[in-house]
Image 1 (cartoon, rainbow, N blue to C red):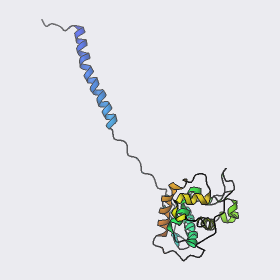
Image 2 (image 1 turned 45 degrees about the vertical axis):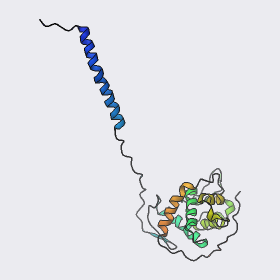
Image 3 (image 1 turned 90 degrees about the horizontal axis):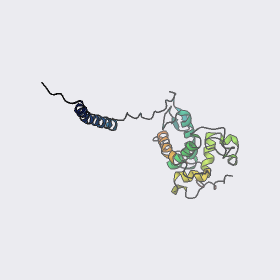
Length: 214
């Protein structure tokens, strides 16, 4: 007659057998969680711009976009900034500084409102009342022209970083505020200018010193 295994020994055997199996299951689960590939990160979407014909601003042909995430209405304002810069300088850096400043101030939009720091600020550059009449500040070309008149009056502006130049003209609280916008501005200027030869200067290359903002 076969000898039966006592219940206590059977229980101990089952436990001894189950422990390694459970341990292997835990290890496998942890390995699965750690080694599981992450889901692909979606690429940033580019805004869909309305398919409209190019618009010529001065000698600049402005496409529907997008360029650097901006569509034609904002790119037209960037082209007006470049046109105004052309009156004063041939420097592409200067043109990009103007576009950079307008990106930081208004996202290249002509704003008809200010903020708590400057409730009278208006336009592409959020220029305050000491810049001149509201009609000039709300006009893309004339506001940019006035910006460059002050900017190019800064002695040695060429040796300063773009954000330092903008900060001296705008008088904003953070001198590094405009830094993130300069690569975008460079891309916009490069795309809009293409192989265009700049027109001859018509304004004085040595404008008066910039006016201090209140």
